Image (cartoon, rainbow, N blue to C red):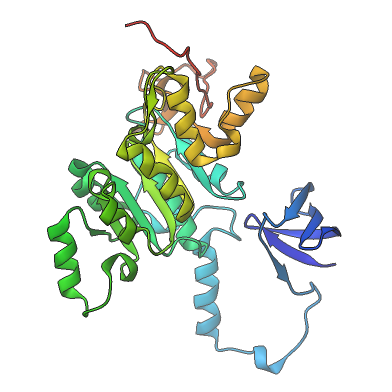
Length: 347
């Protein structure tokens, strides 16, 4: 039976139908979960696998230590073990809810998401988990972090100490010149360096943006992403230099992660513009409320402190930072929620 890899999972192909000259409709089956899926390729991307029946070949023999290294690498990738790479490669004490963003991203044809968790729930950790997982799966070699200027040192330290990811800071012209001095003449830092952290204020400059986005990035993370949203009122909306930056970032990366604890400023057009950076086809609030909620849910994941149960020092679960609940008292652990407010908010 023919097999393919699609969305980081192995599927058996039940049928493959040509629906156009360059498009194929696959009907797929996952024996491990008994799940079925229909996928149109392209836009979906797949990779063919060899037949399941093994073929003996003397050329396939290799020393034990070579096999052991390959096996360990596969285990750390999390693909075959059913666990995420952060369990092996991260120096963190993860909470269960912090793996929801990466699980959601891996289900998407294009792994992009607005992570709008409440303040204090660890969006930096969630972003690091996503980066480590994509890196382990061979999908995150070139990484760009775009954060407020004052948070660059904090981000650099957290990525290094908690995930072992070392980033080069290019936050101004002086830092760019220093990076250029260390490289041979003619080599561009934005092209040569695979992990760069910069600021929104520096990147929004036209001459900087052209150089920074010249090479395509595998993953771009934007902290305080609400600065990328449209400004003004519904009657007089306007785009700032930051807002014009958003679509350009989307078009120059394979995966985009936006982080914001305040994705909605009270104006629907502003919130819509933020969702549009993630997925333009879902950035609409017209139609049935259930359909709108489903659209928003595909592009955004949001949990409030009251929705989360966190592990205390003694291993007990605490709900939203409050005292532990009694054993029989229910909680909404990991429940996702969001609110589309009215275009105007009083005050």
